[in-house]
Length: 428
Image 1 (tube, helix red, strand yellow):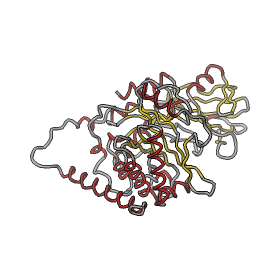
Image 2: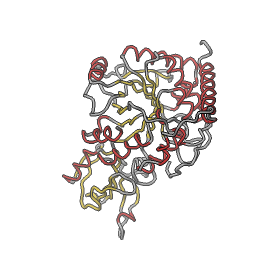
Image 3: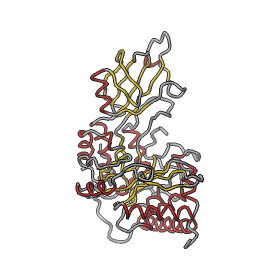
Image 4: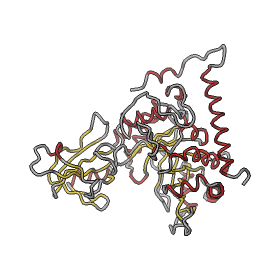
C-alpha cells in the first residue's frame, strides 16, 4: 500500500525563503563532492577515489551524514524509467526481453595477472568468441542502451585498483577505451567483497571513472543492501551511499540474497517486507530518482536431514548445506514448474526427485514469495523459496510507490516472458 508520506509530493511551494533543508542538502552535496575530488586527486598523484526489519530507523553514520528523514529523499516520480537486466557473459545478441530498455552484459573484468597484479580484460581477452559490435548494434536497433558491466570480486585486486594511484589511472583509461571501442552507452560497476575501510576510496574511483568518460555516458554502481546492525568487518558495509550518489548517475540496489547458500537457516531470497525495509534504509542516503531496485529471477533449494524418529518433519529437520552435505543451490521458475509437473528436475548438476510432497507450490502471505517442500528419494527434506510473476510484480511496484528510477533484474537468462511483463507493467 502506498505510504501516506509519498502523497505529500504535491505540496505547495513556500514563497518567502529557501527552506533550510534545501540549503542543508546543497551544502552537504558540495562538501561530499569536494571530498571525493580531493581523494581522487591523491589517488592519481595529482596530474599523475543481514536480516531484521527496522522500518524508518536511520542507518549508522557512515561517511557523509544522512538527510533528516528518508521521506525527504523521495523526489518527483521520474517520467522515464529504466528496466535493466544483467546479461552474463553473452557472446552474441539474443534479443531484448519485453519492457527492457537497458542491457548490462558482464563483459569487463578485473582479474589476476601473471605477476599477481590486476589485469583488465574483456571476455574476448579471456578467449570468448564475442561479437561485441553485433550485440551492441542489435540492442540499439531494438531500442535498448548497453551498459557494460565491470566485475571485480577479488578483495586484494579490488583494493589495489581502488587505492593505488597508478593502477587506478590505468583502470580508468582502459574503461574509457572499452566504452569507445565497444560503442557502449555507459558502464555498471559491480565491485563486491571489498574492504569496508576503503569505501571512500571506492567512491573516489567511481568519480574518476565518471570523469574519464564523455558526459553523455552513464555510470551506474551496484551496491549491496545495508545489514541491520553496523558490522565494520562485513563487506556489505563497503559502500558509502551518499558519496557514491554524488559520484555516479545511478545506484543499483541489489535487494536480494536475504537467504543464500551461506545462510544458517532456510528462507526467501527477497521477502517483500525485507526488500522494502532495505530500500527505505537506502533512501536515507540516496535520492529516489537515482535508485534502481534490484529484483531476483531465482530462488534457492535448501536441503535438510530428517532425524530418525522425527515427529514433525518440517520442525525437526536439520540443515545440511553448511556442514559439507548437499549444497543449497539457486533454482529458476522453469525448474520449479518441471519439478511440480514431473516430480523431478536437475538443478546445478544436483538431481531432485520427489518421494512425497509436504507443501506444493504455495504462496506465502508473510513473505510475498512462493514456497514448496518435499522429501526426496534419499530421505532428505527440501525447502524451496522462489519467485514468480506475482512476487516480482510486487517488488517492481515499489519502483512506482517510492518514485525510483527503475528496476534491475538478475539475470536475463533466468527470465520468462510473463515475469518480464510483470516487472515492466508494475513500474509504469
